[in-house]
Image (tube, rainbow, N blue to C red; front, side, top):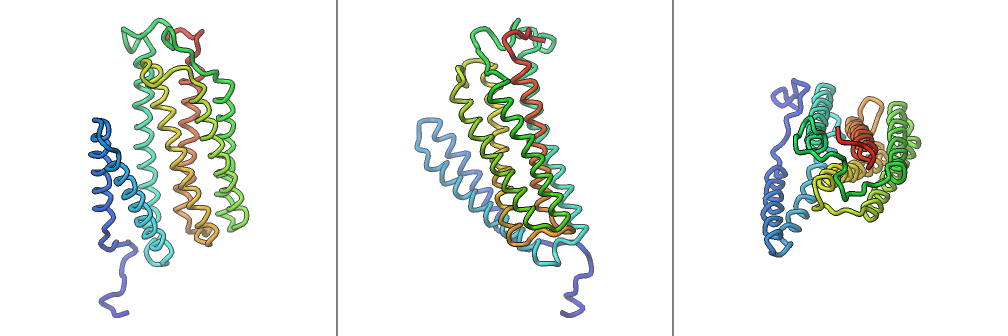
Length: 271
């Protein structure tokens, strides 16, 4: 390597990538295809966008993993920048759920909405029992937070076997959570369009379930990366991002359980 090409700084200057452009095309296909489908058109445009988006994910993440394993790109300053990026992303996700909670309280608390119903949920809506499936799911998700923390500690200790066990247990608990949530939706006596309570309920819990699904995919990727020996005590930003994201999902669920499930009982007056 000549002096002209020697890297004289700790930063990672990325190579030109096709993935931002491909991802933009995928998002456009999904948007236009979705609108077309909702206007009684075919769904193929939307599905093409989904497949193209999944291809973008695979290609882009593969490039990032390759950069992480190259040894020269993800230097300590770059890792700090990646961590800050993950934190800012999670903050944006927090605000995403704040919007749903704002809609929920705006519709249920008379002090925030003069036309709020006298009781919450509104008359005719029978909410789910918070101490059945929702409480079981709370225990499952809190347990998954403990197992992912266990895996993180194993990463810091350099124990690959314990890393794999911790991640595998977390994924199993996550799949159990999603299965129970699907079962819970099947037991609900109200539909999405049956009023403001069902709308806010399904939007908040449904998007949380989607985040659990995304986090599960993230952890599955981390499992195979751990199996390949990618994570080291001083170099595991990819797993840290997955663990932080998972803890965010845990905390959001606690708020959902307390307010959307437990607080919203037939005997609870609005406000």
